[in-house]
Image 1 (cartoon, rainbow, N blue to C red):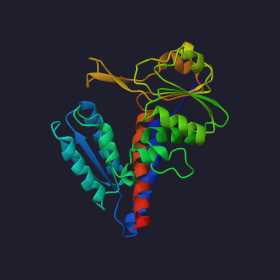
Image 2: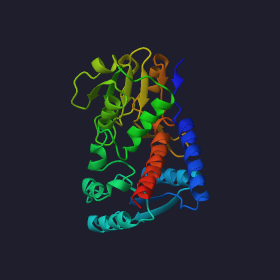
Image 3: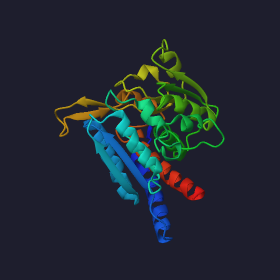
Image 4: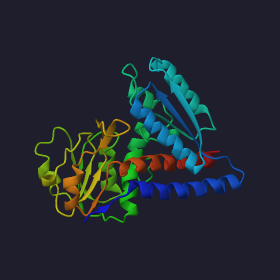
Length: 292
């Protein structure tokens, strides 16, 4: 039987560690770390994610600010609000929840965020620091995946790792982290890779981040592999109160019996992303204190 990589459990441990640190800071007469969140429009999934982040802030004792704008806000106005957050010394880190309306450039918005406060780790400066000896704020989801592997003491050194999905937000930074920190031999596959299974079925560690339900089937996975499923897609399910359920990129039911370790969806990488966001906010707060 495979061992479950329980992101929910590990994220709860991380939150306890952060809460203890915040209590210590407050006891010393310092203010609590402060995370701000900007959300544009009324995308249901985005609001669910934002609510999860606010709940996590409350659990660890962070201060938080939420700004919600109509989807009609101009790019220029949104960037002005971001610049105000950049200048506000009481705000340690902030995120702009994606996706954004079509008339707003994600790249322009991301690059207008100060790298020191970019707790999602999306700016070019933070992305570029991943491969350096002194990484700054790490992209939250890849950071969460690495933390999950570390806390389960999964050996990555010298292992063959395959990353399926090469997005700027997850797959590409994960490939760099597994090479640099994990010291693994990494193959990065994407939508133009032909016959992906020739790579996946040789992988000791398989990381999948595409957003296509059940893309990875049992015949694509090596016996005893470690499988981390980053993908989450909402599919309609009238039997659920919410009317939908979340499924991953991996056909969990059929793949799990072949693996040594596997993440569930939900409850695997998702909670780790939020835990990473909290770790980055604490780090941003500490960096701000150092320069004060």
